Every structure is written in structure tokens, then in C-alpha cells.
Amino acid sequence: MPNVAIVTDSVADLPPQVAEEFGITVVPLVLRFGTDVYRDGLDLSPDEFYERLRGSKALPATSVPPPVAFADVYDKLAEKTNEIVVISLTSRLSATYQVALQAVGLMKKRCRVEVLDSQWAVMAQGFITIAAAKAARAGASLDEVLDAARRTMRRVDMRAAFDTLQYLERGGRIGKAQALLGSLLKVNPIIGLKDGEVYPVARERSRAKAVDYLHDFVTSFGNVEGLAVEYAADLDEANKLVQRLRSEYPQIPIYLSRTSPVIGTHTGPGLILVTVLGDRQSAAPQR
Image (cartoon, rainbow, N blue to C red; front, side, top):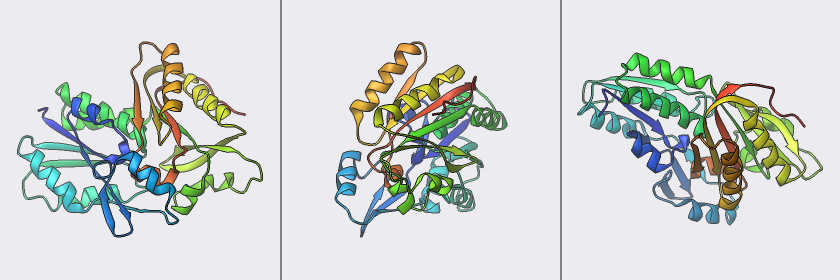
């Protein structure tokens, strides 16, 4: 095990094999359907979740892990290491960062724990976590691991296409993307994250054009080092976008990831998104 252990939460949407490959511990958020409580990504399969979501008149509730969930992870890791870095989803959308900090005071073992607000979510947060894990594996100190994560924070970006914003609106996470609501036309809204908050980017008149937008967003970057395509319910659509990008970036690893039920609660089944690790080369596509 590296000298520095890496922890993140389930909203990073790391594919399980990737978390295992890099030795990353994932703490699940919590999902509630009525009186039923599930650990995000563990107790309810995505297919079961979306089937239930479509048939539910009321949105499920999402919540942060209890502090003891983080504290138990810290104590277990402290048996093997003296240093832990935690990469949390943006504190502008969730209290997970504060809970991860609070949990440090509940530890039974002595260990240095540093919690970093990634200011991101989904695989943007995932790429930051992977960068931290790679640095730790290479023998970096805790401060060097944090530096690697912060550098990556500045080099990731994402765009997400929806078939509706009703889930973001109903879940209270819509932020500045409120500006995309209310159109009389059938549109496919595109959103991004900036400073940890959701903001509006564009509206496309068809799903095909929305996916084209995501593709063009990726190709607006130079020095691309990592790509991810995430989907909620339409694997075929996601695979087609992966293949399209793979033909243009044959040497770049492309992660295909499924968004966790906690993310799906606020986005609905029509979500598809791309995350890029690279350097912005030109302006993002505008339509």
C-alpha cells in the first residue's frame, strides 16, 4: 500500500475496477426511497433504480454519508498508513466535504487526514482522485499528492446533456441553469460546472445535436490525457460516443462510467456527459 491512502465518495463515479486498480476507497452517499435506505452504488443496481425512478411520483431523497462512515474508513486505513487524502465532491452542491472533515475528529486511531474539496463531481472528481492515487503510488508525500490533485482540478472540465431539467429543478440543484427552463420548444439543455456550481451552457434542438455538442467540447481541448463518457440509462448511446472519440483519440484511455443513483436522482435517466482531462485549446463550441 502507498504511504498515502486515497479516499473519495461515490459521486466521483469511478468504475469499480478503476477504484480497485488504483487502490481508492469509495465512501457511498445515501439514497432514500420512502422508508427504504440504500448505499449509493452498492445496495440498488442502476437498472433497478431507474425503473423505480420512472415509476415514482416523488423523487427519492439523497443525503451525505454519516460521519461515522468516513471515520470507520479512516480508522481501517490508519492500520496500514499514517497519511490519508480525501477528495470530496463540490461543497457547493453537498455537505459531504464538511462531513468528511467532521469525521476526522471521530477517529479512534492517530493518522494525518487532509480533506480536499474537488469543486467538481462525476468523473471530473474521478480524474482528480486518480491523479492523487497515481502520485501516492509513485511515492509522493501527502503534500505532493495534494499538489497533484490541485493541478488536476485546473485541467478537468465536463459537459452534460439532458432531455429535461425537471430532476435538477425538483432536487434543488439547478443553480444558474434555471435560465434554461421555461422554453416552449423541445430542447436538450447542456450544463457545466463552474466554481462548484451548475451553470447553463447551451440548448440543442435534438438529442443528436446535443451529443455532437459533447463531442465538439472534447475536441476543443489540446494535450488530452484522459476522457470519460458517462450515462444514466442509455448504454448504446454512450458506447457510440465512446467509439466516435476512440477513433479520434486512439492512444487516450476513455472511461465508460455509469452515473451513480445519487447523481441520477438529480438528473434523470436521460443524462449523458463527457469529462476531459487536458488543456483548453480553443473556445468551447457555441451554437
